Length: 211
Image (cartoon, rainbow, N blue to C red; front, side):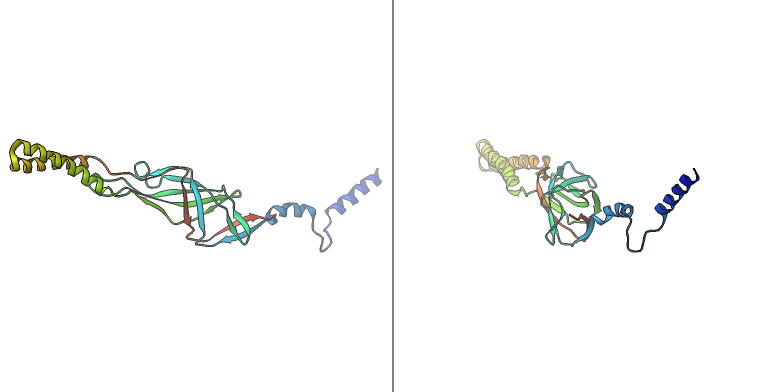
């Protein structure tokens, strides 16, 4: 019995004794492997991030600070190595939103991205803004005002010659102006599924799995 206890004690001492210099514990390697499986790569400022929107942004529906979601359309490659895979997700916010005015002012909307999720890691990013403005409608407005004016002139001429034509033009033109003032201009929409490109304004350092 004493011999058995002595053998157990010796075995335990051998198991807990320090390893010879230069030899690495396999247990330690197992713990270090996850860190050693990654390396850090710097993505420089100015790198173009090509993404596809997963949410719709519009001047009539979006408000400042509303979230914007998208995913990476084209992988970012640094030194021949893919550091941000296609499909990585990005999120951001609406930074500007203005509806079209009834009298003047074109609709506008702008947004940028603030976060990137790639290979299980989340990084804070800063990108340039995506800005969109609705097209001007001056020609359409001119037609809206001009056509009722022409019609009024015809009616005025029938009613009272030249003087009637002048009065009819004024009345008709006023009706057209009222139509323009009561309706808003065209809104701007950047729909989900639309591809956009932004530049990184600051560099980011990402962790890339070593293969």
